[in-house]
Image 1 (cartoon, rainbow, N blue to C red):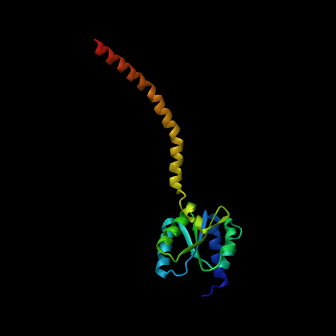
Image 2 (tube, helix red, strand yellow):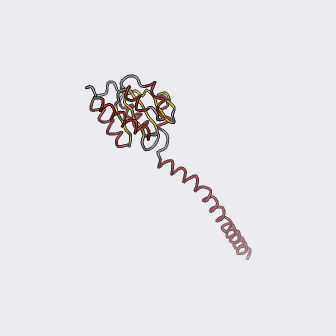
Image 3 (cartoon, helix red, strand yellow):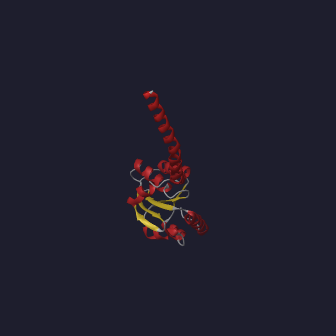
Length: 176
């Protein structure tokens, strides 16, 4: 079904707004997926905070102009579904990678992050990035470690003194 000019403008504006705020993008060829499988993919993406959309390549090229995803313009060929990470950089990559494991016909074409288009093989590296909560937990552990070590060290001094006094006491009791 052909889109009217107004509908095309609306699609371009929507995708451009999402691309302007997104942290990463994944493009995959969906040829061979059933409607039910596409619905499952969309549902999973929605749950994970990923914007997923099938867009005509010419409209997608217009939408990414002026964003950090302008680099993907040359890779937009064939029937592609675009997934944009809204919450953390690895979110879209995790959704697409996990879905592609179960459905062989979904083939990742490229990944884009930080203004660079990367080959499909890089999806695992992007998908393995920690989530925001995991990254904060790691940061807190790194910040907390020196203070814990200082507390243990300071606590060891009186503990060692108590053990030494107890050993002297035990030695005197044995000799008496």
